[in-house]
Length: 266
Image 1 (cartoon, one colour):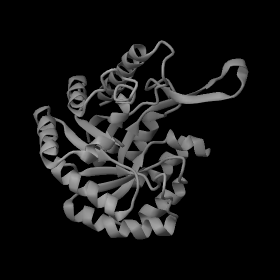
Image 2: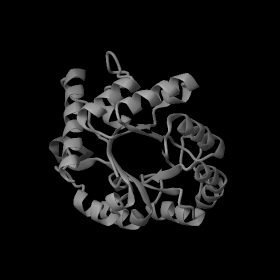
Image 3: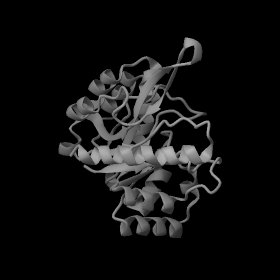
Image 4: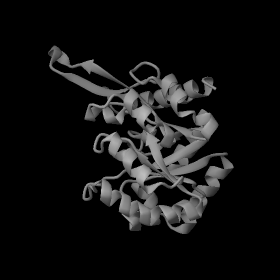
């Protein structure tokens, strides 16, 4: 088990709002400086256009920094998953995170099982685990049913209990339902705040330990240390009214706080 950081912890600093967006090597170096051991390249489209030489350079940079790499994408069409399996091989990655749906494809449970039964054996043969993330577009029970039906130890669940709140699923229930199948954890805290005039709520991220995530209960249920499940820092940091510099500075502070909190929990 190791602690790491995702590209999602650099959401604003790699966005079009950044005067000079951070590159992957920039994020790798920052992760190492903060004490992370893993870097998850998650939903980061530029990695798909890297050639073999660029992937080799990225792998070498991670190795020099003492970092393990993980990948993340969306969708379960076999062609797409096998493309990411090839990239995983080039990068030395043994865990790929995905999600059932894409903008143009929303498979039902039966279709999802059939598609995954095509791709997962190839992952297993390569020694790579595929993890499907919990999120509001898919009921957690359905996601668990898919994983159970495929029935392969190289297919599991990436647990992010905050995502499913928008589906009116309680984080504690999501943890309980998925715990036996978890292969990766996204660690981000979250909270509701009242909007001006008490007209509804805003649901957004907050510093780890200050929101609704019951981190200790989640860890007790999953047992990541015993099972070798990595914990990856992410954020839902809203854009700050003061502009990019304030947002980037706070994003860095949240990341540093999260990784420090995880390291102290050992």
